[in-house]
Amino acid sequence: MEDYTGKKITIMGLGLNGGGMAAAKFFASAQILKPSMDMLSDYDIRYVLEKHEMSDFENADIVIKNPAVPLTSPYLAKAKRIETDISIFLSEFKGDVIAVTGSKGKSTTVSAIYHGMKKLKEDTFLGGNITISPLSFLEELTDKSLVILELSSWQLADIRGKGLLKPVVSVITNIMHEHQNRYNSVQEYADDKKVIYQSQTKNQYTLCNFDDDYGKQFFDETPAHPIWFSGSDMGKDEQIWLDGKRGYIKLNGKTEQILPEKLLIPGEHNRRNMLIAAATMYLYGFKGTEIMNALADFRGIPHRLEFVREFNGRKFYNDTTATIPQACLAAVKSFEAPVVLIAGGTDKNLMFDLLPEIARAAKKMYLLKGSATDKMIAELDTHGCRYNGPYSTLAEALDAAYKGSEKGDVVLFSPGATSFELFKNEFDRGNSFKERVLQIK
Image (cartoon, rainbow, N blue to C red; front, side, top):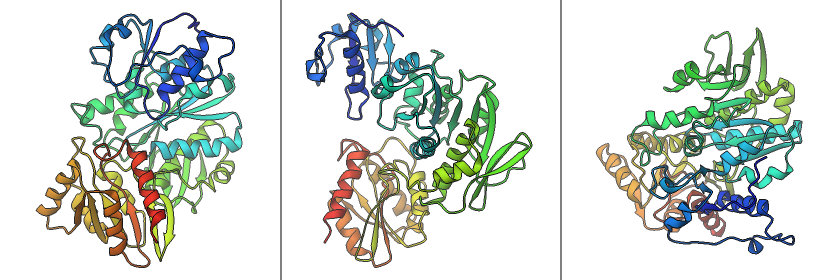
Protein backbone atom coordinates (compact mmCIF):
# COMPACT_ATOMS: atom_id res chain seq x y z
CA MET A 1 0.00 0.00 0.00
CA GLU A 2 1.22 3.48 -0.81
CA ASP A 3 2.51 5.57 2.09
CA TYR A 4 0.70 8.93 2.14
CA THR A 5 2.40 10.16 5.33
CA GLY A 6 3.49 13.76 5.03
CA LYS A 7 1.83 14.33 1.64
CA LYS A 8 -0.09 17.52 0.97
CA ILE A 9 -3.57 16.59 -0.27
CA THR A 10 -6.10 18.92 -1.89
CA ILE A 11 -9.63 17.49 -2.07
CA MET A 12 -11.54 19.34 -4.78
CA GLY A 13 -15.22 19.06 -3.93
CA LEU A 14 -16.46 17.94 -0.52
CA GLY A 15 -19.86 17.20 -2.06
CA LEU A 16 -23.11 15.99 -0.53
CA ASN A 17 -22.90 12.24 -1.14
CA GLY A 18 -19.89 11.10 0.85
CA GLY A 19 -17.01 10.90 -1.62
CA GLY A 20 -15.10 14.00 -0.53
CA MET A 21 -15.69 13.31 3.16
CA ALA A 22 -14.48 9.71 2.86
CA ALA A 23 -11.37 10.88 1.01
CA ALA A 24 -10.68 13.48 3.71
CA LYS A 25 -10.99 10.89 6.45
CA PHE A 26 -8.83 8.40 4.55
CA PHE A 27 -5.92 10.78 3.96
CA ALA A 28 -6.14 12.45 7.36
CA SER A 29 -6.06 9.06 9.06
CA ALA A 30 -3.17 7.93 6.89
CA GLN A 31 -1.07 10.91 8.02
CA ILE A 32 -1.53 10.09 11.76
CA LEU A 33 -1.23 13.73 12.77
CA LYS A 34 -2.14 13.00 16.42
CA PRO A 35 -2.32 9.67 18.26
CA SER A 36 -5.66 10.68 19.72
CA MET A 37 -7.55 11.64 16.54
CA ASP A 38 -10.75 9.80 16.08
CA MET A 39 -13.02 12.44 14.65
CA LEU A 40 -12.83 14.61 11.55
CA SER A 41 -12.80 17.77 13.68
CA ASP A 42 -9.45 16.67 15.11
CA TYR A 43 -7.82 16.21 11.70
CA ASP A 44 -5.40 18.67 10.12
CA ILE A 45 -7.82 19.83 7.41
CA ARG A 46 -8.03 23.35 5.99
CA TYR A 47 -11.40 24.16 4.41
CA VAL A 48 -11.67 26.55 1.46
CA LEU A 49 -15.38 27.04 0.77
CA GLU A 50 -17.21 28.80 -2.08
CA LYS A 51 -13.94 29.51 -3.93
CA HIS A 52 -10.72 27.89 -5.17
CA GLU A 53 -7.19 29.09 -4.49
CA MET A 54 -4.65 28.19 -7.17
CA SER A 55 -1.91 27.69 -4.58
CA ASP A 56 -3.85 24.77 -3.09
CA PHE A 57 -3.45 22.95 -6.41
CA GLU A 58 0.09 24.06 -7.23
CA ASN A 59 1.46 23.06 -3.82
CA ALA A 60 -0.43 19.78 -3.39
CA ASP A 61 1.30 16.43 -3.86
CA ILE A 62 -2.05 14.89 -4.83
CA VAL A 63 -5.35 16.48 -5.85
CA ILE A 64 -8.45 14.36 -5.22
CA LYS A 65 -11.14 15.57 -7.62
CA ASN A 66 -14.88 15.21 -7.39
CA PRO A 67 -16.29 13.37 -10.46
CA ALA A 68 -18.44 16.39 -11.32
CA VAL A 69 -15.31 18.54 -11.84
CA PRO A 70 -14.28 18.48 -15.54
CA LEU A 71 -10.71 17.39 -16.24
CA THR A 72 -10.39 20.61 -18.28
CA SER A 73 -10.54 22.71 -15.09
CA PRO A 74 -7.67 25.26 -15.05
CA TYR A 75 -7.05 24.35 -11.41
CA LEU A 76 -6.44 20.72 -12.27
CA ALA A 77 -3.96 21.85 -14.95
CA LYS A 78 -1.69 22.97 -12.09
CA ALA A 79 -1.89 19.66 -10.21
CA LYS A 80 1.16 17.38 -10.01
CA ARG A 81 -1.02 14.28 -9.64
CA ILE A 82 -4.79 13.84 -9.95
CA GLU A 83 -6.69 11.01 -8.29
CA THR A 84 -10.26 10.24 -7.16
CA ASP A 85 -11.65 8.21 -4.30
CA ILE A 86 -12.27 5.42 -6.83
CA SER A 87 -8.69 5.42 -8.17
CA ILE A 88 -7.22 5.47 -4.66
CA PHE A 89 -9.51 2.62 -3.66
CA LEU A 90 -8.62 0.50 -6.69
CA SER A 91 -4.92 1.13 -6.05
CA GLU A 92 -5.26 -0.20 -2.51
CA PHE A 93 -7.77 -3.06 -2.84
CA LYS A 94 -6.58 -6.31 -4.42
CA GLY A 95 -9.71 -8.46 -4.06
CA ASP A 96 -12.56 -9.16 -6.50
CA VAL A 97 -14.56 -6.31 -8.03
CA ILE A 98 -17.85 -6.42 -9.92
CA ALA A 99 -18.49 -3.15 -11.80
CA VAL A 100 -21.73 -1.81 -13.29
CA THR A 101 -22.34 1.29 -15.40
CA GLY A 102 -25.00 2.51 -17.82
CA SER A 103 -27.41 5.38 -18.31
CA LYS A 104 -30.25 3.85 -16.29
CA GLY A 105 -30.71 0.78 -14.14
CA LYS A 106 -27.23 0.65 -12.67
CA SER A 107 -28.21 1.54 -9.09
CA THR A 108 -31.00 -1.04 -8.99
CA THR A 109 -28.71 -3.62 -10.60
CA VAL A 110 -25.82 -3.15 -8.15
CA SER A 111 -28.24 -3.10 -5.22
CA ALA A 112 -29.82 -6.37 -6.35
CA ILE A 113 -26.38 -7.94 -6.83
CA TYR A 114 -25.35 -6.79 -3.36
CA HIS A 115 -28.64 -7.98 -1.82
CA GLY A 116 -28.21 -11.45 -3.29
CA MET A 117 -24.45 -11.76 -2.85
CA LYS A 118 -24.56 -10.69 0.79
CA LYS A 119 -26.66 -13.76 1.55
CA LEU A 120 -24.27 -16.10 -0.23
CA LYS A 121 -20.97 -14.37 0.53
CA GLU A 122 -21.00 -12.40 3.76
CA ASP A 123 -17.77 -10.57 2.94
CA THR A 124 -19.46 -8.43 0.24
CA PHE A 125 -19.51 -4.62 0.06
CA LEU A 126 -21.25 -2.02 -2.12
CA GLY A 127 -19.96 1.42 -3.11
CA GLY A 128 -19.31 3.99 -5.83
CA ASN A 129 -21.84 6.22 -7.54
CA ILE A 130 -24.58 4.87 -5.28
CA THR A 131 -23.44 7.54 -2.75
CA ILE A 132 -21.13 5.27 -0.73
CA SER A 133 -17.43 5.92 -1.23
CA PRO A 134 -15.49 2.62 -1.14
CA LEU A 135 -12.85 4.42 0.92
CA SER A 136 -15.38 4.43 3.77
CA PHE A 137 -15.06 0.64 4.17
CA LEU A 138 -11.53 0.02 2.85
CA GLU A 139 -10.14 -0.86 6.27
CA GLU A 140 -12.75 -3.61 6.67
CA LEU A 141 -11.67 -5.46 3.52
CA THR A 142 -9.38 -8.42 2.96
CA ASP A 143 -8.04 -9.83 -0.29
CA LYS A 144 -10.95 -12.30 -0.19
CA SER A 145 -13.63 -9.61 0.01
CA LEU A 146 -15.97 -8.87 -2.92
CA VAL A 147 -16.71 -5.23 -3.76
CA ILE A 148 -19.55 -4.23 -6.07
CA LEU A 149 -19.06 -0.80 -7.66
CA GLU A 150 -21.59 1.38 -9.41
CA LEU A 151 -19.61 3.69 -11.68
CA SER A 152 -20.77 6.78 -13.58
CA SER A 153 -19.28 7.87 -16.89
CA TRP A 154 -17.41 10.65 -15.06
CA GLN A 155 -15.92 8.25 -12.52
CA LEU A 156 -14.81 5.98 -15.35
CA ALA A 157 -13.30 8.86 -17.34
CA ASP A 158 -11.23 9.81 -14.29
CA ILE A 159 -9.48 6.40 -14.25
CA ARG A 160 -8.91 6.09 -18.01
CA GLY A 161 -5.42 4.82 -18.80
CA LYS A 162 -4.57 3.94 -15.19
CA GLY A 163 -5.15 0.18 -15.65
CA LEU A 164 -6.72 -0.06 -12.20
CA LEU A 165 -10.19 -1.45 -12.93
CA LYS A 166 -10.20 -5.18 -13.71
CA PRO A 167 -13.64 -6.44 -12.72
CA VAL A 168 -14.44 -10.13 -12.55
CA VAL A 169 -17.71 -9.14 -14.25
CA SER A 170 -18.42 -5.79 -15.89
CA VAL A 171 -21.89 -4.68 -16.96
CA ILE A 172 -23.13 -1.86 -19.19
CA THR A 173 -26.89 -1.74 -18.70
CA ASN A 174 -27.70 0.64 -21.59
CA ILE A 175 -26.73 3.89 -23.29
CA MET A 176 -29.31 6.67 -23.52
CA HIS A 177 -29.30 10.34 -24.47
CA GLU A 178 -27.88 11.46 -21.10
CA HIS A 179 -25.56 14.17 -19.72
CA GLN A 180 -25.44 16.03 -22.99
CA ASN A 181 -24.75 19.25 -21.09
CA ARG A 182 -21.31 17.73 -20.36
CA TYR A 183 -20.59 15.79 -23.59
CA ASN A 184 -20.40 16.85 -27.23
CA SER A 185 -22.18 13.68 -28.40
CA VAL A 186 -23.72 10.45 -27.15
CA GLN A 187 -20.77 8.57 -28.67
CA GLU A 188 -18.36 10.58 -26.53
CA TYR A 189 -20.46 9.68 -23.49
CA ALA A 190 -20.45 5.99 -24.51
CA ASP A 191 -16.67 6.10 -24.93
CA ASP A 192 -16.29 6.95 -21.25
CA LYS A 193 -18.42 3.92 -20.39
CA LYS A 194 -15.93 1.69 -22.23
CA VAL A 195 -13.33 2.26 -19.53
CA ILE A 196 -15.23 -0.29 -17.41
CA TYR A 197 -13.88 -3.19 -19.50
CA GLN A 198 -10.69 -1.86 -21.08
CA SER A 199 -8.34 -3.45 -18.51
CA GLN A 200 -10.21 -6.73 -18.16
CA THR A 201 -8.66 -10.06 -19.15
CA LYS A 202 -10.02 -12.88 -21.30
CA ASN A 203 -10.86 -14.89 -18.16
CA GLN A 204 -13.34 -12.20 -17.02
CA TYR A 205 -16.81 -11.33 -18.35
CA THR A 206 -18.49 -8.31 -19.92
CA LEU A 207 -22.30 -8.29 -20.13
CA CYS A 208 -23.59 -6.35 -23.16
CA ASN A 209 -27.12 -5.25 -24.02
CA PHE A 210 -28.26 -6.89 -27.27
CA ASP A 211 -31.23 -4.48 -27.48
CA ASP A 212 -29.08 -1.34 -27.20
CA ASP A 213 -27.60 0.57 -30.16
CA TYR A 214 -24.17 0.68 -28.54
CA GLY A 215 -24.13 -2.92 -27.32
CA LYS A 216 -22.31 -4.25 -30.39
CA GLN A 217 -19.44 -1.77 -29.92
CA PHE A 218 -18.91 -3.02 -26.38
CA PHE A 219 -19.32 -6.68 -27.36
CA ASP A 220 -16.75 -6.40 -30.16
CA GLU A 221 -14.21 -4.30 -28.27
CA THR A 222 -14.00 -5.81 -24.80
CA PRO A 223 -10.88 -7.90 -24.13
CA ALA A 224 -12.96 -9.97 -21.69
CA HIS A 225 -15.41 -12.77 -22.50
CA PRO A 226 -18.53 -10.95 -23.82
CA ILE A 227 -22.05 -12.29 -23.26
CA TRP A 228 -25.27 -10.80 -24.61
CA PHE A 229 -28.33 -10.13 -22.47
CA SER A 230 -31.78 -9.31 -23.83
CA GLY A 231 -35.47 -9.15 -23.07
CA SER A 232 -36.06 -12.09 -25.44
CA ASP A 233 -34.38 -15.19 -26.85
CA MET A 234 -31.60 -14.20 -29.27
CA GLY A 235 -30.81 -17.71 -30.48
CA LYS A 236 -27.14 -17.40 -29.44
CA ASP A 237 -24.88 -20.20 -28.22
CA GLU A 238 -24.17 -18.05 -25.17
CA GLN A 239 -26.80 -15.66 -23.89
CA ILE A 240 -28.80 -14.25 -20.97
CA TRP A 241 -32.48 -13.62 -21.67
CA LEU A 242 -36.06 -13.38 -20.50
CA ASP A 243 -38.59 -15.96 -21.60
CA GLY A 244 -41.81 -14.32 -20.58
CA LYS A 245 -41.15 -13.38 -16.98
CA ARG A 246 -38.55 -16.06 -16.24
CA GLY A 247 -34.83 -15.46 -16.74
CA TYR A 248 -32.25 -17.89 -18.14
CA ILE A 249 -28.56 -18.14 -18.92
CA LYS A 250 -26.97 -20.40 -21.55
CA LEU A 251 -23.24 -20.95 -21.15
CA ASN A 252 -20.86 -23.80 -22.02
CA GLY A 253 -23.70 -25.80 -23.55
CA LYS A 254 -25.79 -25.62 -20.37
CA THR A 255 -29.04 -23.69 -19.85
CA GLU A 256 -30.15 -22.78 -16.33
CA GLN A 257 -33.00 -20.71 -14.94
CA ILE A 258 -31.70 -17.84 -12.81
CA LEU A 259 -34.73 -15.57 -12.36
CA PRO A 260 -38.18 -16.63 -11.11
CA GLU A 261 -41.48 -15.49 -12.58
CA LYS A 262 -42.55 -13.67 -9.42
CA LEU A 263 -40.59 -10.60 -8.25
CA LEU A 264 -41.41 -8.05 -5.56
CA ILE A 265 -40.00 -5.08 -7.48
CA PRO A 266 -42.39 -3.62 -10.12
CA GLY A 267 -41.65 -2.80 -13.76
CA GLU A 268 -40.43 -4.71 -16.80
CA HIS A 269 -37.27 -2.58 -16.88
CA ASN A 270 -36.56 -3.73 -13.33
CA ARG A 271 -37.05 -7.34 -14.39
CA ARG A 272 -34.20 -6.81 -16.85
CA ASN A 273 -32.11 -5.26 -14.08
CA MET A 274 -32.79 -8.31 -11.94
CA LEU A 275 -31.86 -10.59 -14.84
CA ILE A 276 -28.49 -8.86 -15.13
CA ALA A 277 -27.97 -9.15 -11.37
CA ALA A 278 -28.80 -12.85 -11.43
CA ALA A 279 -26.47 -13.48 -14.37
CA THR A 280 -23.64 -11.66 -12.62
CA MET A 281 -24.08 -13.85 -9.57
CA TYR A 282 -24.10 -16.94 -11.78
CA LEU A 283 -20.88 -15.93 -13.50
CA TYR A 284 -19.32 -15.37 -10.09
CA GLY A 285 -19.97 -19.00 -9.33
CA PHE A 286 -23.40 -19.46 -7.75
CA LYS A 287 -26.15 -21.83 -8.90
CA GLY A 288 -29.53 -20.83 -10.32
CA THR A 289 -31.53 -22.08 -7.35
CA GLU A 290 -29.24 -20.25 -4.90
CA ILE A 291 -29.57 -17.05 -6.90
CA MET A 292 -33.37 -17.18 -7.19
CA ASN A 293 -33.73 -17.76 -3.45
CA ALA A 294 -31.31 -14.94 -2.63
CA LEU A 295 -33.10 -12.41 -4.86
CA ALA A 296 -36.66 -13.45 -3.97
CA ASP A 297 -37.20 -10.74 -1.34
CA PHE A 298 -35.47 -7.81 -3.08
CA ARG A 299 -37.88 -4.85 -3.07
CA GLY A 300 -35.81 -2.23 -4.86
CA ILE A 301 -34.08 0.84 -3.47
CA PRO A 302 -35.03 4.34 -2.32
CA HIS A 303 -35.96 6.88 -4.99
CA ARG A 304 -36.39 4.32 -7.79
CA LEU A 305 -40.06 3.36 -8.15
CA GLU A 306 -40.12 3.51 -4.37
CA PHE A 307 -43.51 2.81 -2.82
CA VAL A 308 -44.18 5.62 -0.32
CA ARG A 309 -47.73 5.22 0.92
CA GLU A 310 -51.28 4.09 0.17
CA PHE A 311 -53.88 6.65 1.22
CA ASN A 312 -57.55 6.99 0.38
CA GLY A 313 -57.33 4.35 -2.34
CA ARG A 314 -54.29 5.91 -4.06
CA LYS A 315 -50.75 4.48 -4.13
CA PHE A 316 -47.89 6.98 -4.18
CA TYR A 317 -44.50 6.17 -5.77
CA ASN A 318 -41.26 8.14 -5.71
CA ASP A 319 -39.13 7.76 -8.85
CA THR A 320 -37.04 10.92 -8.55
CA THR A 321 -33.96 9.32 -10.15
CA ALA A 322 -35.83 9.16 -13.47
CA THR A 323 -33.84 12.12 -14.80
CA ILE A 324 -34.41 11.42 -18.49
CA PRO A 325 -37.65 10.93 -20.48
CA GLN A 326 -36.87 7.28 -21.27
CA ALA A 327 -36.80 6.46 -17.55
CA CYS A 328 -40.05 8.34 -16.99
CA LEU A 329 -41.76 6.38 -19.77
CA ALA A 330 -40.53 3.07 -18.36
CA ALA A 331 -41.89 4.04 -14.94
CA VAL A 332 -45.33 4.97 -16.27
CA LYS A 333 -45.52 1.63 -18.10
CA SER A 334 -44.60 -0.29 -14.94
CA PHE A 335 -48.14 -0.18 -13.53
CA GLU A 336 -51.36 -1.86 -14.57
CA ALA A 337 -53.37 0.72 -12.60
CA PRO A 338 -54.03 4.19 -14.10
CA VAL A 339 -51.07 6.53 -13.52
CA VAL A 340 -51.37 10.18 -12.48
CA LEU A 341 -47.91 11.51 -13.34
CA ILE A 342 -45.94 14.40 -11.86
CA ALA A 343 -42.99 15.36 -14.09
CA GLY A 344 -40.72 18.26 -15.00
CA GLY A 345 -37.51 19.88 -13.82
CA THR A 346 -34.17 21.20 -15.02
CA ASP A 347 -32.85 20.78 -18.57
CA LYS A 348 -29.49 19.16 -19.35
CA ASN A 349 -29.69 19.44 -23.12
CA LEU A 350 -31.88 16.37 -23.63
CA MET A 351 -34.49 15.58 -26.26
CA PHE A 352 -38.14 15.46 -25.16
CA ASP A 353 -39.74 13.83 -28.19
CA LEU A 354 -41.02 11.02 -25.92
CA LEU A 355 -43.31 13.39 -24.01
CA PRO A 356 -46.39 12.76 -26.20
CA GLU A 357 -46.01 9.00 -25.66
CA ILE A 358 -45.60 9.56 -21.92
CA ALA A 359 -48.70 11.78 -21.84
CA ARG A 360 -50.76 9.15 -23.68
CA ALA A 361 -49.54 6.38 -21.34
CA ALA A 362 -50.51 8.36 -18.24
CA LYS A 363 -54.09 9.01 -17.17
CA LYS A 364 -53.19 12.62 -16.28
CA MET A 365 -50.00 14.67 -16.26
CA TYR A 366 -49.01 17.42 -13.81
CA LEU A 367 -45.90 19.49 -14.53
CA LEU A 368 -43.46 21.08 -12.10
CA LYS A 369 -41.84 24.25 -13.44
CA GLY A 370 -38.28 24.30 -14.78
CA SER A 371 -36.15 24.78 -17.88
CA ALA A 372 -36.79 21.20 -18.99
CA THR A 373 -40.51 21.67 -18.38
CA ASP A 374 -40.54 24.54 -20.87
CA LYS A 375 -39.27 22.14 -23.53
CA MET A 376 -41.76 19.47 -22.42
CA ILE A 377 -44.65 21.91 -22.78
CA ALA A 378 -43.55 22.89 -26.28
CA GLU A 379 -43.50 19.23 -27.30
CA LEU A 380 -46.86 18.51 -25.67
CA ASP A 381 -48.50 21.57 -27.24
CA THR A 382 -47.20 20.61 -30.69
CA HIS A 383 -48.94 17.23 -30.43
CA GLY A 384 -52.10 18.47 -28.73
CA CYS A 385 -51.47 16.57 -25.50
CA ARG A 386 -53.21 17.61 -22.30
CA TYR A 387 -51.36 18.48 -19.09
CA ASN A 388 -51.82 20.51 -15.91
CA GLY A 389 -49.51 23.28 -14.72
CA PRO A 390 -46.69 24.08 -14.60
CA TYR A 391 -46.74 24.48 -10.82
CA SER A 392 -44.21 26.62 -8.96
CA THR A 393 -43.52 24.11 -6.19
CA LEU A 394 -43.56 20.35 -5.80
CA ALA A 395 -46.11 20.72 -3.00
CA GLU A 396 -48.52 22.51 -5.35
CA ALA A 397 -48.02 19.90 -8.08
CA LEU A 398 -48.59 17.01 -5.66
CA ASP A 399 -51.69 18.57 -4.12
CA ALA A 400 -53.18 19.12 -7.57
CA ALA A 401 -52.32 15.59 -8.67
CA TYR A 402 -53.87 14.09 -5.55
CA LYS A 403 -57.07 16.11 -6.00
CA GLY A 404 -57.18 15.11 -9.67
CA SER A 405 -56.74 11.40 -8.94
CA GLU A 406 -59.31 8.75 -8.09
CA LYS A 407 -59.38 5.62 -5.95
CA GLY A 408 -57.36 2.90 -7.64
CA ASP A 409 -54.92 5.35 -9.25
CA VAL A 410 -51.14 5.42 -8.86
CA VAL A 411 -49.73 8.89 -8.17
CA LEU A 412 -46.23 8.70 -9.63
CA PHE A 413 -43.43 11.25 -9.28
CA SER A 414 -41.10 10.49 -12.20
CA PRO A 415 -39.65 13.82 -13.37
CA GLY A 416 -37.84 12.90 -16.60
CA ALA A 417 -35.43 15.76 -15.85
CA THR A 418 -32.84 16.83 -13.30
CA SER A 419 -33.50 18.84 -10.17
CA PHE A 420 -31.10 21.70 -9.63
CA GLU A 421 -33.34 24.74 -10.07
CA LEU A 422 -35.48 23.86 -7.03
CA PHE A 423 -33.46 21.20 -5.16
CA LYS A 424 -29.90 20.29 -4.11
CA ASN A 425 -30.06 17.05 -6.11
CA GLU A 426 -32.49 14.30 -7.07
CA PHE A 427 -32.33 12.71 -3.60
CA ASP A 428 -33.31 15.98 -1.95
CA ARG A 429 -36.16 16.19 -4.48
CA GLY A 430 -37.31 12.64 -3.71
CA ASN A 431 -37.19 13.21 0.04
CA SER A 432 -39.25 16.37 -0.39
CA PHE A 433 -41.86 14.41 -2.34
CA LYS A 434 -42.04 11.68 0.29
CA GLU A 435 -42.35 14.15 3.14
CA ARG A 436 -45.23 15.90 1.37
CA VAL A 437 -46.99 12.62 0.57
CA LEU A 438 -46.89 11.63 4.24
CA GLN A 439 -48.50 14.97 5.14
CA ILE A 440 -51.60 14.37 2.98
CA LYS A 441 -54.70 13.99 5.15
